[in-house]
Length: 254
Image 1 (cartoon, rainbow, N blue to C red):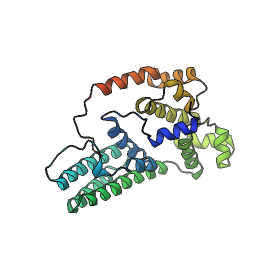
Image 2: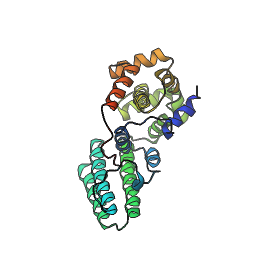
Image 3: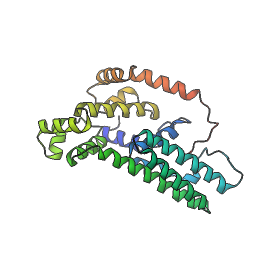
Image 4: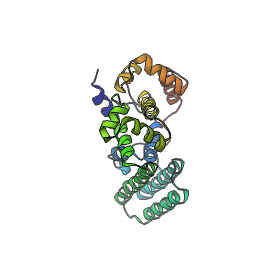
């Protein structure tokens, strides 16, 4: 069994042993932008947009073909970000701006550079939007710490020591600014991470329970079922079955 931190970080880095379904990478890409995770988006963009596998032929002209895919991508990003809380006029205004810029590009490489710029622009705005909901620097630091350390057991005392606040005061402040307790926030993130790992990785439920620092597999299963309605194994089976119903005949655009 891999060390928990290594296993979790390897999953986030999307090593070659991670399973991928035909449509799920596209969904995950847009979801990561919506979450404001700039680090993860940069990982997605390591492969140049113009070299993405699975891009369908929308035009016989290579430049026009990649431009069409760019337009589709930006339109979808705009909608995902609106769903994530970005102002409608801002999101569509950015979309119009980047689509018009793409119309002036004369090479595929220019569109590739524009794609990265647009993606990072949207992601950075979503990250800022998330932080604007947090008033204090201490709570923002706590949230960053939680996101980076889901592979560990995080307590109020852990966070209080990290930001040098009294645990009781931190608990009240965290609840006031996020709308939920520290334990609820951590649990929700761990359940979301577990869902992704069940779909996108080869780790078993018992391995995921250990990687995400649940006390044991029974606790993980009980918690997962309470908040999703199914066991981890059932969740995994349902999504794998859904994947097999799709055939990779459509373009994966991002």
